[in-house]
Image (cartoon, rainbow, N blue to C red; front, side):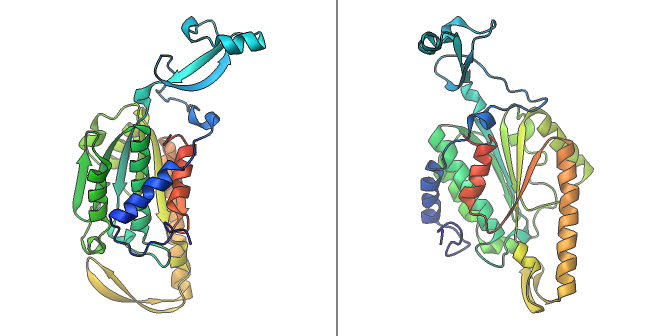
Amino acid sequence: MNPLLSPASPELNDSDFALLAHYAKHLGRASKATRFSMKSGEKRSKQKGHGMEMLELRPYQTSDDLRHVDWRVTARTGHTHTRLYAQENDHQRLLLMDLSPAAYFSTRYAFISTRFLQLAGLIAWRSEQQGDKLLYSLSFADKTVENFNKSSVWAMIKQLKSASQVSNRNQPGNHQLGWYKSKVTAKAHNKDIIILTDKQDWDSEQQTALQQLAKHNQVHWVQIFDHHSFELPPGQYQFADSSGTVSVNITKKSSEQAKQDFFEQNAIMRQRLAKIGIRHQLFDISKPPEGIARYLLDQGALR
């Protein structure tokens, strides 16, 4: 079995995060068509300049800088071609992770919180390997940890290890979005923003803040759930949360109702995000973290 799919413990250690570096390095690269596709209203544009990553080679246009004409291709094809480059400062991203106490649960493979933390680790390693600047805001239990400057991967991993502690589910958690009124997002502009959360609801004021964030940035929203939690055999189960341990009687009817409620609420959430141009993707816990990272790569959130 994939060692990332089902780690030995939900409480991740240095070895778990060190393993992620190997997977981050071998994610591959996104297809060109996806990497520099643009959506309506997106502020980012292709810039031309030396010392930057080449995006594509295309036929010359009258507005192109003659310094960037590819003379070898021009001579071979008989038609003038120009190289286009991406600005290095395009490769800046924010990672916003917000875990509720309910994320510290799953029926198999790994806790939902564990999958989010693995994905956060992959994003951190990939950014480090590509020389990209990664700012972050991590919310879990009753804590919010923010980083405004580029720091070492291990400084972030220290916080991720703390977030993996099962005892975090005994805290009441934050009912607001963890990055609401965050200093990290206050002046975010022209960045790739990756949101990792299991939360599905927020108030109108927070919706306005999200809309402002999406107006000036490319936002990718990743949600993880466990479909097996709606397929538990009927019986009595013990569940622990911030209120203590309680006994819950599961029936086929209650499971079906819980599944219906989840997807109805999820559909409402999707609509709210779609209205403000935020890309949302729902993954099951059976999806390994490197698979989710490749999705982000294909969407242009990573490179």
